[in-house]
Length: 84
Ligand SMILES: [Zn+2]
Image (cartoon, rainbow, N blue to C red; front, side):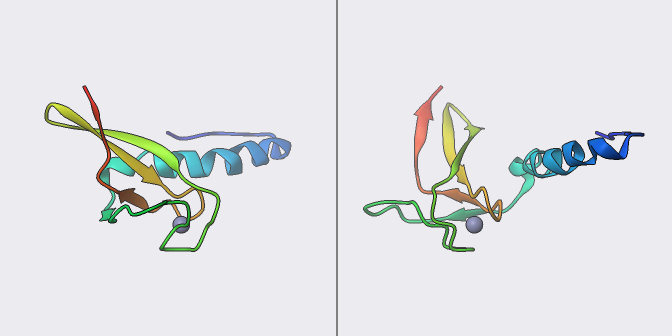
């Protein structure tokens, strides 16, 4: 997607959208396997401590419940799935 903006005052909108465009190709990124123990709140890649965004990916008859770090955008698989 290409955004053309003639008004420099709207540049902040483009900057805001940039991370969202990055997350758009989440499914093509490397997915890091993590063993889930008691909790999964801190990003092992960058140390971000406020949890993750959810990402869902079809895998045959199940759907993988993946987690993406809001800070470094690394995608993690902790073994969660949802039906359907
Ligand atoms: Zn991170």
